[in-house]
Image (cartoon, rainbow, N blue to C red; front, side, top):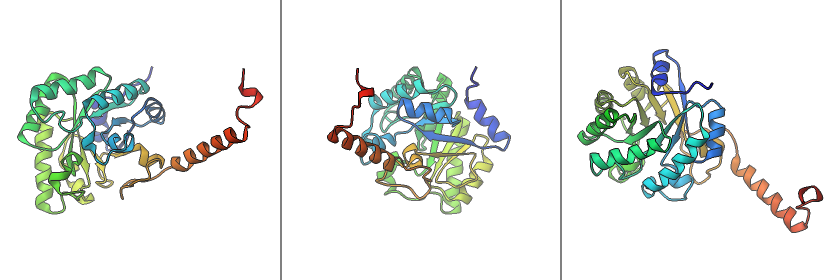
Length: 266
């Protein structure tokens, strides 16, 4: 029997001074292979708005789309913890609708949800979700859903005062029940300081090597998304070139009559 990764597993990894991996996935086969590779947390990130659906920002994806991707990924995962990114405006209006939307993702196979930002409302929401039985991954630093209010893609926590503020927010979310925290585009030393002060594991998204985990978008890791690659992403393959090559060879075989061959027909 496969030993499943749980929120308690991640906390024990931090306590042991070890690391865990987080990678996004949006479809059944990618989720399956990612899980088989040993990735500990599979995140259905709202980054799919750009990488899978072709939008310019994460604002353009909604609950209905995230439900479809959540179902597909959950069916492909046997071991990893499955986390669904709650999309823009899906948890901001009121507590009741937020719990309903988050609960739908759990019903469809997610084990937890991710929520961006900090406010008194967000802290209360994390508390209520946790009490309801829905584990919450928090997200501070640069928060893409707040792109417009932040004034663009800007590094957060560059000063001691800003770092202390992120820590204060993180501690409040931890107290409310968040089981982990994504730190995005935060200087490495700032992220190290915050990580050492928290009991819950931190997950670096461009926040350096001292966090308890690292997360990347699968399209960046696989070399599939060529429109934009963040500074902090590492490319482990070239799927774009592979797909182009395969598609071109298929096109050629169809047009020169070599596909299908006698062994490929009934």
